[in-house]
Amino acid sequence: MEVCYQLPVLPLDRLVPKHVLSRRGAISFSSSSSLFGAPDPRQLSQRRGAISYDSSDQTALYIRMLGDVRVRSQVGFEPEGRISHPYLCIDFRTLHSEYEPQRVHRLLSFQRYLHSSRLLRGVPQQIPLHILDEDYTGQARCMLEKVGNWNFDIFLFDRLTNGNSLITLTFHLLNQYGLVELFQLDMVKLWRFLVMVQEDYHSDNPYHNAIHAADVTQAMYCYMREPMLAKSLTSCDILLGLLAAATHDLDHPGVNQPFLIKTDHYLATLYRNTSVLENHHWKSAVGLLRETGLFSHLPAEDSLNMERELGSLILATDISRQNDYLSRFRRHLDQENLCLSNASHRHFILQMALKCADICNPCRPWELSKRWSEKVTEEFFQQGDIEKKHKLEVSPLYDREINTVGNIQIGFMTHVAEPLFAEWTRFSDTRLSQTMLGYMGLNKASWSGLQQEQTSVSKEAELGSAGVPFENKV
Image (cartoon, rainbow, N blue to C red; front, side, top):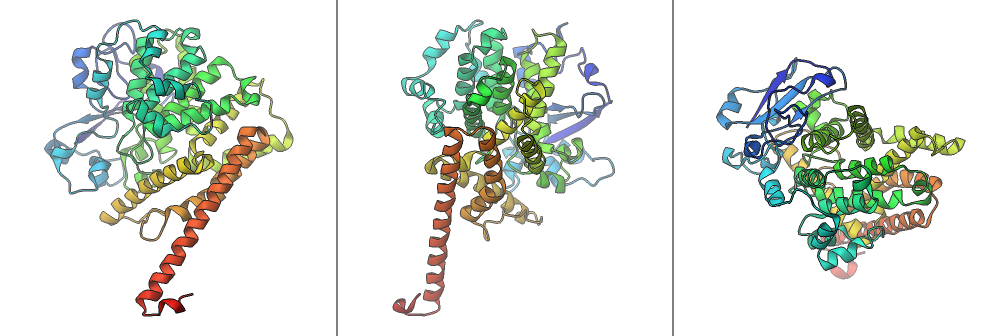
């Protein structure tokens, strides 16, 4: 199970000790003179858990390590001034069945290093772009030629790439923009980073998995190609936008923030109940950047700035702050004072673009939208099942007995998606924006129709069970 230790509070620039902490989690330290160097491959199997820090100056450093279940049951992490909850030492994915210690394979930030190592095995020290291109099978390569198409089927692409859609898509886009050469990114480090990012998404999450991250990355690419952005974004903006999209839900546990808070999870304590998941996604991404040394060749100040800007983009996806960002966006549009030659304004638009990409499922064609809707609702219902099983208050919309995919989606479109995409269309009134609004209107009507059919069927069933003759059923 999980053992947590609290280390002394240190400024960010002193967070890197010179001793070795070999692991394949959020941050890995090298014993060499170079900070954040690549870990010794012989020590990869020793890696356990994650390291997170809480702010850029004052921070508590937590190390989560995989230990013996019997030890963990005796040595628990007690948040200061709070009562420990069983969820602090349970992997969420084991909650659907009876707790069996031997079934605990991975805790929240425990990397799937075995699969990662398998993918990386045999990768040469230098990988020319044309050789990687040859690895794309015919159909996958054909799909990549149309990666800017809004009807891009990420599920099909994931099958064609043998479950490696996030790696393949992100690498292709970085290469297409010329960012690999422009930023002099080491090919081995980049490939290793993308493999580790994909592996840090939980494949058993119905919705918050690597395919969702790939879908958001593809949508982000579509938005960055829009005329208003394409002529204004710098190469650094594009790099950050793609990396933020790829990592925006990194290591998502499949439950929401209120669940973490009400179960006194250590992440909620670490981030003081504020943007808990988003902070974790950001810090996990930073950890992988540092472990792989992807930006280690850049000046230290530039590297830290990129980490901070990456965090700012990921934190914008916190749905609880939706109204704050939307109000600010609306004010800018009302006052017509957005100036994309201004770096802060471009960054804000990137935040809004990522927010749109994150919740664009209602704007996709019906077959894709319906499939995503079913997946996200199933993840909601699984959390509701966990809450019921452990006598917790069931979160709104998470009870499968009183909610349907249709009513959840109609409410989401009405109160969240439509207001956001209406303002995005004011900012960028293009064919793509109109297409998205059109699809959302059709999808909402389709869900409404399905809801009416289900209601009619339910009424007929009730009348039938009451013994009413079929011809009298109205």
